[in-house]
Amino acid sequence: MFTRALKSKEKGRPRALWPARHLPCKLSLPPLLALALLCLLLSPLPASAAEPEPGFLLAWGSYGQGNGQFDGSAGIAVDSSGNVYVADTLNNRIQKFDSGGKFLLAWGSAGEEDGQFAEPAGIAVGSAGQVYVIDTYNNRIQKFDSGGKFITSWGAFGQDEGQFDEAAGVAVDSSGRVYVADTFNSRIQKFDDSGSLVTMWGSEGEDNGQFSEPQGIAVGPAGKVCVADKGNSRVQVFGAPSSAPPAAQPPATQPPAAQPPAAQPPAAQPPAAQPPAAQPPAAQPPAAKPPAAQPPASKPPAAKPPAAKPPAAQPPATQPPAAKPQAGVDLVVFGALLVLVCLLITLVVVLIRRRRAYY
Image (tube, rainbow, N blue to C red; front, side):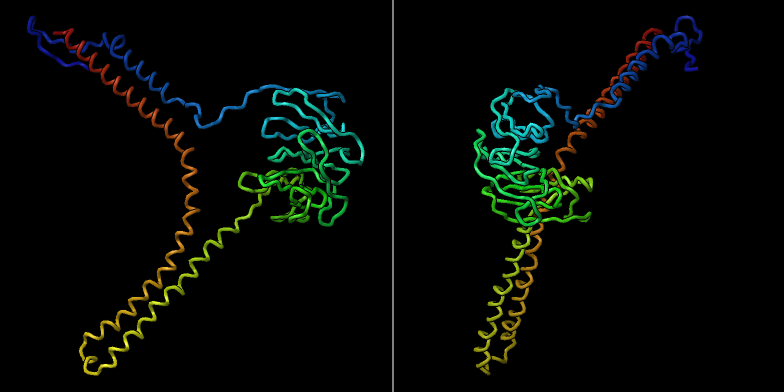
């Protein structure tokens, strides 16, 4: 097996070109090493696209009523400088810390006066540093500066506009408008920075736009409002994409602009006033030109597809993540090809050595 009879030039007897005694120890070892290396390269690689888990940095606080201690704290917010504001709910106060957890100040106590609270639950910080606090059981919003100085408040218990029933969540957008999750009224109310109602939406139910005890609320950079619909176990997102349809209406006003070319046929009538000149067929091509003005009238509908291009710009945003797994696949393919080349070189070297050993 794996032998071929050759006549020896010296003794005239046949001998094997590749004796079997050499196969186990020399011929099979390099391929086995190459095969092992190939298996290592083809083994599952760690997902390069997955983000690493955030590492723990620090913690502070304990149970109590002292500075830096908490009792059932339910709300937290961070300002542009990294300062942390905590709604210390059952201690009926707000505590402020720096980014390292160092206590800076605290304000508030149990009560119904300005600057007092009844289990504050939600808190948010505006772009200018204003602090908005959901005073849950006083059914109001209190506004403070970054130093805890009272500025204004609004709200009362009820179901009318600007009233609350144990509201729990608050958020502020980049324009300073305040969004409140009016929990037991199952609705969202939107105010300006002085407390004047701008709009509100929602009712009790399970359909889209309805809520069941909404509690958490947040506003994204594009103005989208995200609401944690607690009783329905879902998140609802709201926005105002109504600016796109008006942009599609201006092309509809262009067809009237295409009518002036249709006013040119009356200009073709003066040649018709010359009976002798009307007989040549050459006068008929000008009459064929008005129909040629109709294709421009069909161009305004062709202006609608450009209005559909902005949505088409969204798919490219999904391509960069897809490029990360492709890099891993290319690495595996390159490694496999490299191993195959090494394997072929190894086999060639072994065969050359065997051939030289017997000649």
